[in-house]
Amino acid sequence: MKKIRVFLMTGLTLVGLASLGWADEPITNWLVNPEGPLARQVRSNFFFAMVMIMPFLFLAEGLLLYAIIRFKAKPGGRAAAFHENLRLEVLWTVIPALTLAITAVPTYQTMRAMEVPPKSDLVVGVIGHQFFWEYRYPKQGVQFAEEALVVPAGKVVTLNLSSVDVVHSWWVPAFGVKQDANPGRITHAWFQAERPGHYKGQCAELCGKLHAKMFIDVQVVTPEEFEQWILKKKGVSLPPDTTRKS
Ligand SMILES: [Cu+2]
Image (cartoon, rainbow, N blue to C red; front, side):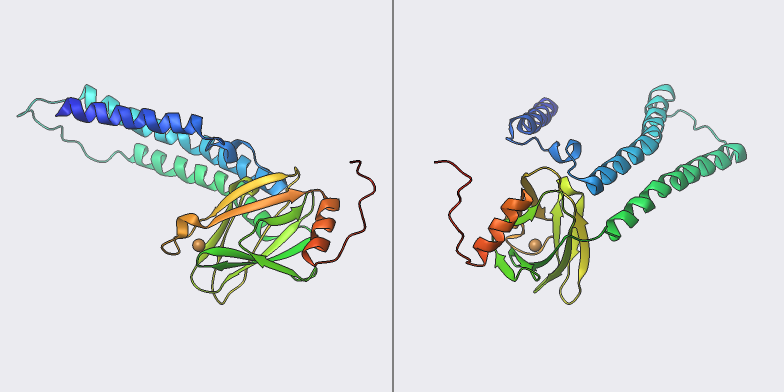
């Protein structure tokens, strides 16, 4: 019985690890490829917090392992009897408190950066529906749903998020953005993607039966391509492109 359990656990772990490697985009991609200044700040804040807290994890787990092995008692063994240790208690209160205080400084700076965008170049309304996303470009007079959000590279894009039904969450890991879209209330987020390309995301608030299918696709294009795209969306007929051959 025990052997079967060990075999199953090992098998599952191997399949899990292998799927990380086989995926066409490794699941850790978002972690190591932040896109734009805000995402980079979020990412370095994440690593800083990890560095600050990991020693505590290793210390606690190490002590636990040590105690399990070193003080293993046979049935009937007598338990040790000791009471408080003031010096130890002060130490294990002060050191974690200081660590938290130090971690809080860059964290609050990052949270402020997420709240306060630089001057906005493009405003997009993001509206969550069960189960798709709608996008509105008020200044450009363009709106659509169930399609990729298209934005120009290098520009500050500010989002006004809301929902028509339940709480959704617009989450694009590469941009360092995860913001709730609530009915009857507008929330804000911003990002500045520098490299053109496709960025994937997913609704991150369990919103119903098809929540898992509520994907987000952001297409970052050059500012020229963006202008063309807006014109096309508005149905303006374009002059023939003479710059391109064939
Ligand atoms: Cu949703």
